Amino acid sequence: MSIFKYNDTDALGRVKSVDTAIVIVHVADVERLRKLQVNRLAVLQSSHPGQHLIGIIQKITRNAVEAKEIGDVEGDEGDLKLPTELNLVRITLIGTMVDKLGAESNVFLRTLETVPEIDANCFAVEGESLTNFMQVIANIASDGERLSLGHYTLDDKAEAFLNGNKFFQRHAIIVGSTGSGKSWTTARVLECMAGLPNANGIVFDIHGEYRPLKADGIRHLRIASPKDLDAKSALKDGIVHLPYWLLAYEAMVSMFVDRSDQNAPNQAMLMSRTIIEAKRDYLTKGKHDEVLNNFTIDSPIPFSIADVIARLEELDSEMIPGARSEKQGPFHGKLSRLVERLKNKQTDRRLGFLFQAPKETMEFDWLDKLVAALVAGTKDQADKLGGVKIVDFSEVPSDMLPLIISLVAKLIFSIQQWTLTENRHPIALFCDEAHLYIPERQSSSGGEAFAVDAFERIAKEGRKYGVGLVVISQRPSEVNRTVLSQCNNLVAMRLTNGDDQNVVRRLLPDSLGGFSDLLPVLDTGEALVVGDASLLPTRVRIQQPENKPNSGTVPFWDKWGEDKEVAKLSDAVASWRKQAIQASKK
Image (cartoon, rainbow, N blue to C red; front, side, top):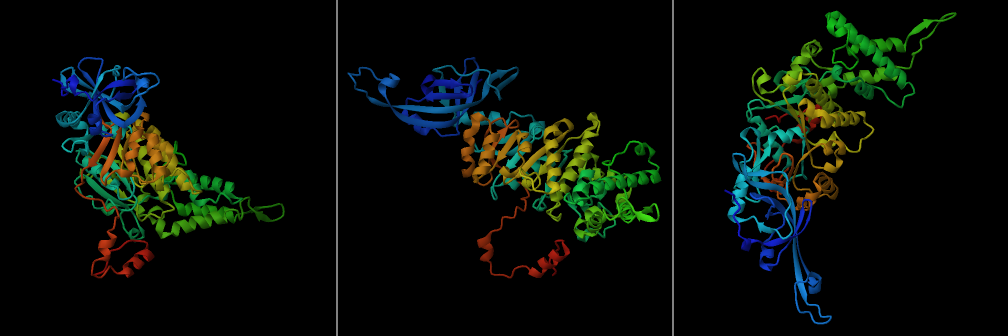
C-alpha cells in the first residue's frame, strides 16, 4: 500500500512547466505557499500509476503580475489591467517512489523514469507522510551496506545511512571550516568501520588529533621520532620506520640533487648507477637470484647508503692515468655537494625514521612485516585486531611531510596492484588535512609533486585495485582539483570562505546547486550529504562518536578564567630541543 495518500483537494499547486529534473509549480493558495520551506520535500503525480516523483523545494517566489498576462481575470474593460499575484515553487526532482517493485513494497529509486505532466498535482511531504517516507529511506539499505552517519534534519527519528560500498568505491570528500565538526564526522565513519569484523583502513593523522579514538578494531601507529631511534625493533609498540631504500629513484633525486647545480645531470646519473650496484650487491650476497634477474632501481630492495656514499666519494676524488702522469677523473670534484647532502640527511635525527632505522629493516623479509602492519585487514593480522590503522605523522618535519605520506600511499597502492584480483582485500585511505600534501598550487618542493602524482593515480585507478580515498580538508579550494573531481560523495560541513563554497558548488550536480547556499549557516555537527552513496541528498545531523577526536579547539575564555597554574613551559622548550613531545615531569 502506498505511503502517500492524497486527495486532489490536498494539492498545494499544479505543474506549470517541466525542464528535465526541474519542475515549476503554480500555487494558487497563498496560505499554503506561506507554509512551504526551502529544502523540504515535495511529491508529484507521475504519469505511471503506482509511482510518485520525489523532489526538493529549491525556490519559492511571489510576484505581482498583470492579469492579462496570465489570463486569470475576466471582463477587463479597455486598457484596464487588474493586478494579481503569481506564486511559483521551483522543485528539483531527486527520485521515484514506487508502490510495488517485485515482492517489495514502497521502494525509493534514485532514478527518474518519467517526469510529471503539465497540470499534475504537487503535494507537500509533511506530518505522517514525511515520517513514513523517512522510515523507507532509513530501511532501504541492506545490513551489509549500511554506514550510519546520524539522523536526517528533516526528521530526527529517521536514521541517515550511506551505502558503505559506494562511499568508498566512488571516493569521498569531507570538508568543513575549523570547528564545524569535520573531525567528529571522520571519527564517526572510522568507528563504524572498526565495528566490522574484517575492516581495513589507514588514516594519515597529521596533528595527532585522532589519538583519543580507542574503539575495538582501531590500531595506533606512529612514525618514529628522534627519541625512538635507539629502539631495537622497527615496529615495536606501534613505532614505524620507513627506511630510505623504500624511496623511488625520482624521490631520491629530489631530496639529494640540487637541480640548479651545473653538475646535477652527472650527480643524478651516478647516484642511479651506484644505487643499482648497491642493490645488485645486496641481492648477490643474499643469493636472491629470482629477484636479481628482474629488479629495477625502483624495486624495494635494501642497500647500503654508506656504500653508495663511499663509491661517490671515490669517483669525486678519482685520479686516472694520463699521457705523462695521473690526471683528474671525469667526475673529479663534481660530486662534492651531492656527497655532503647525502651525509647531512643521513645524520639528521629528524629524518632518523629514514636513515637511522634499526638493523632489522635491512633484512630482506622485513618489508613483509611493514606491509602486514600497514595494509593487512583485521583477519590477516597476527592478533586479529586493529583493521583501522591511525598513523600519526605529527613529528615528521613539515617540509618532508608530502614526500613521506606519498611514500606510504604508493606502498599501499603498489601492494594492491601486485596482488591477484581474487586475493585483494580492499583498503580505504583517509587523507586528513589533505591541502597540506595534495595541494592545488605546488611549491618548488619536489615532495609535493610526488604526493600529487601518487594521489591523482589512486583517485583515478584506485577503484580497480580496491583502494578507496576519503579526502578531508578545511580548505577544499587548496586541494588538488583532479583528486576532488574523482570523488563522487560529498559530506560538507559549515564553510564560510567564498572560494571553498565555490569548490563545493562545482562538485554538486547542476540541479542541486542551490544546496550550497546552506553551507555558511549549517550548525556544528550538521552536514550536507550528496553523492552516489546517499539515497536522499539532504542535511544530516552527525551522531556523536564514542570517542571525540582531539581537534584542537581550545576554550580560550574558560581557560583564562581558571584560577590555577598552567603547565611548565620548560617542558615545551625541552621537547622543542629534542624534537620529540614528552610528558611533564611530576
